[in-house]
Image 1: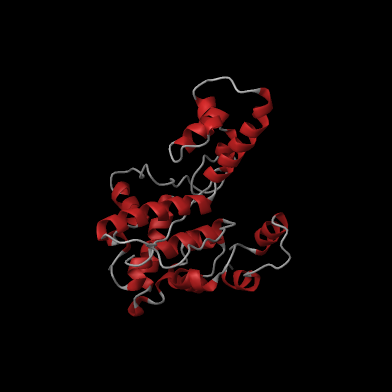
Image 2: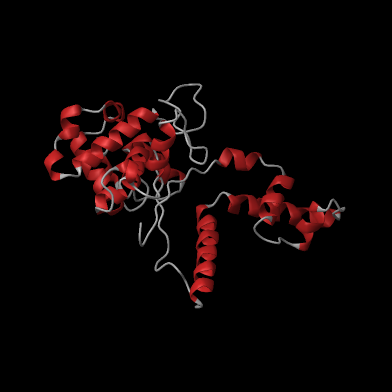
Length: 257
């Protein structure tokens, strides 16, 4: 958008935790110099035994940062600010405020958030249809879908959940694209009841009321402040993080149903 961006990210902790020490340091050294100790290790030089615990702690710290959204945003914001400052011959931050993030705990929350992001230009009135919305993943997906493919730089749709499901989005691509198209039309006042009449298959599987779906896709960011998901997912999330108060519980129970 003209003054903000949205990203829906997937953090693959299993992959990050499987990296060898060498892989962690190779990735980190692409971003930062590291320490004399990590540089020495990557050159294949022997490490004194008493320094090994320090090296191990450093590697685990780097591993944690490499799968941390806050560190990702820190680097992204800094690089954008540097380029903008150089272009305009000024100094300071580029973004007005700090980024905000929300944990998407289940399929319903994921689908609603993705649709909210993909329909941002339509909702703002700067695009007529999802497939003509600049800088959106849905436009890239539509272009590739016309070739019978999926974009290689986006997480693919791999179908409905099943035991042997590969890594990817737990929906059918065609279902999602059709739902986005219908939702975009509903944002026009003369098409307000279109989805409710259709009872789209994806909404039925996710057990989301069509009227609630329109509310979600129009105001996801304003409706929720914190993790988003159904009651069971929220309970597990807050117990895992040892938090007593479950934010968004009433709103999630009302709209993700």
